[in-house]
Length: 185
Image 1 (cartoon, rainbow, N blue to C red):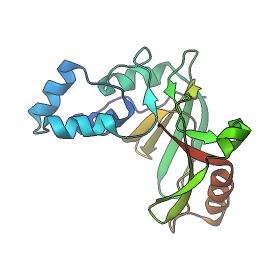
Image 2: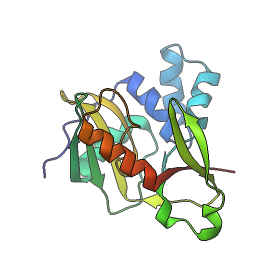
Image 3: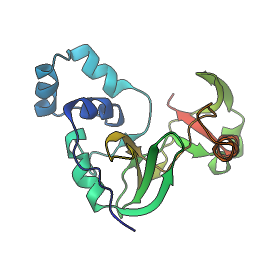
């Protein structure tokens, strides 16, 4: 399969991607101060709950374009909203995955599944300190290869939405019936 054409990361995209990192390099912090971000805004991005890159894989959102080039493209999903999802596999752990198949939970963990509102969708959630490591990275881009987001883990379809085709809605419902969000204690 071909390599992703997404390699350039703007400062605004890097700031958005900061939510998928455990910390901030001082040189990156200076760049965001330079575009008017303050310490509270920067820390809020880092504190966002979600999948996180391992620092041994990538320690800065500005470096993620270089990392994408090193992955093996294993899946491409063309979405009817004009977006494209590409899933890459790596030999090393890319990070923690926050969308987990229910089948990977123990019976004890399954007892703690509950629903939380995510927009108009009732998502299944469970809370744990257990980490689910992954060797995958998903890139979401426009058809002109402009990065929208990327994160460690496999592809997870959006919740059912009006822009989706009937086929996409069916896939979304099936996926979210079998997966849930992991939250930390």
